[in-house]
Image (cartoon, rainbow, N blue to C red; front, side):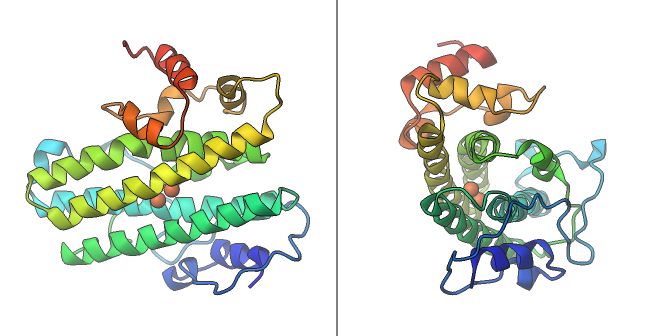
Length: 263
Ligand SMILES: [Fe+2]
Ligand SMILES: [Fe+2]
């Protein structure tokens, strides 16, 4: 299947099965002209909903309750589905990007589809179905600021996916403490994949940026206005996972200064 066809099918899919479509062998002979997809179609009952104050993620202290764990896992599954859609967006938006970059985005997209499947399995175990809880626009609301591959990498790989280098292990630890080893193993798997996704973003931003710019300047200059650098982290901030992704010490020093983290 052509990358473009696959991406279009994902973004216009009205079933979860089609969102998670396994494309078989992918080709990229006709990437077409740039297309900035406005809004993904969603399966019935999985449309974007307005985020309300009461939709807060359960507190870590509440996670002994399996229903609360299911709410967390549902939220994370929602993020994975958004990642699938944003990567499909990128395949359509950047047809002129190097083939090797596009292939990498497609590979990451496949892993995000797998993450959705893995979360769905855990939800089932806990008696919940994907779509039972509200789903939000969240990452998708930033697509107007993703007009170049550099912006895509800075926002998606090096902010949202980077933040998961903190969230995934923190929730993994909390699930483990409640004795939910299946959920904690899944978070460990997600963490390992996210490290690779951040690494992909890091390496390609480095290739795309101009030589006069540092990687820090390139990252910062490609973020939307009023997008605080702290979006690229969770609590606690786990520096070692960024190092595993190849993030440089220089970048980390600038980042910690920007978000007010003390050495
Ligand atoms: Fe993911
Ligand atoms: Fe990812």
